[in-house]
Each structure stands twice: as C-alpha cells, then as structure tokens.
Length: 208
Image (cartoon, rainbow, N blue to C red; front, side):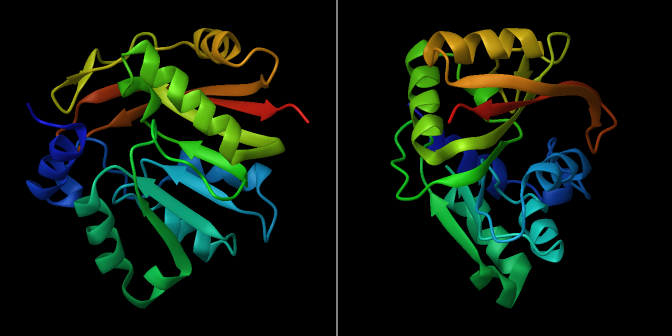
C-alpha cells in the first residue's frame, strides 16, 4: 500500500512545477493574508509548502524567519534547488503534519491545501493538536481548503470540503475555545489545464 509520503513524492516527481494542478505563479491570496498579520521579525510556518513560491515571496517582502514543512522530500528538494543560495534563509522540515512535534512557536501558521486532505477524524484531531502546539497565543492560523462547492478529489485523493463556518465548527469541536474565526474569503484557482477550483481561505486567532 502506498504511503502518503510516497504518494506525494510521486506526484511531485512526475511533473514540472508549472504542470501541477495546485501551481500558482504568484501566491497572491496567501501572501496578502500573511502580510496583514505578520510583523517583521516574527516567525511563520507554511504547512504543505512543497514547491510553492510563497517562501521566496515572504523573503522578498522582508518577512521571516520562514519555515516550510512538507511531507514530500522531493518537493522540498526541488524548492531548495530553485531558490539556490537563498534556500539557506529558509528552515525546511520534511514531516507528516499529523505526527510533527514543533520545537518553537510561530506568529502565523499558513496552510493552503493540507487540511482538506485529512478525511480521517484522527488525522484532523492530530493536525489541530499540532496547530495548537505550534501557534503562539494571539497568533493567526490561515487555512485554505476547497470550498463547499469545490472539487471532491485532488491528486487522485478524496478531500473534505468546507465553508468557513464548517471549518470553524470543526476547529471548535477539536479545540474548544482556542480558535476564533476572524475572516474568510472565497477565491477561484485555475489549474494549468484551465480547470476552475473553488477555494475558501479562513483566518483564525488563537486565544491568549
């Protein structure tokens, strides 16, 4: 049986970045949301960052320290190769978010499309425990998923779709009183093949 890591190593290894369905030439929605909440010098972690352009966009904006976490070592290798010498300015972590034990806290947690792959209730509970451990009190979690009317599958895997209120209810169920929904936006991602995917991006403030 293929493991999650093997699945994503294969997904990244079998295509150029610009051919991946989740490719963005400019991570506009993510970057705008992060910059509103991340002061200079504060730490940010990009969950499932893979080969995305967000890390270098944050560096260009003078933000950091920046950490990128992804399950796929292949994705992180490719991202580091693309950044060249600037890769040393980023902390790279190859780990499963449901098992990761952070050794520091972050002002901002960003996840563009990891949570919606967690179709198992135990994995969602583990994710939220990790989120709580990693995010500093008063910090911001920015979590994007397929919207309620978005795709039912991605990269050959089933997903769970959310409206902002549904995502907030799930976080409240798993961590009562910890995360408060502070804003949400809908947007449409167009894949390299021209397919439209409906997303929602919600921001939460951690109590403290």
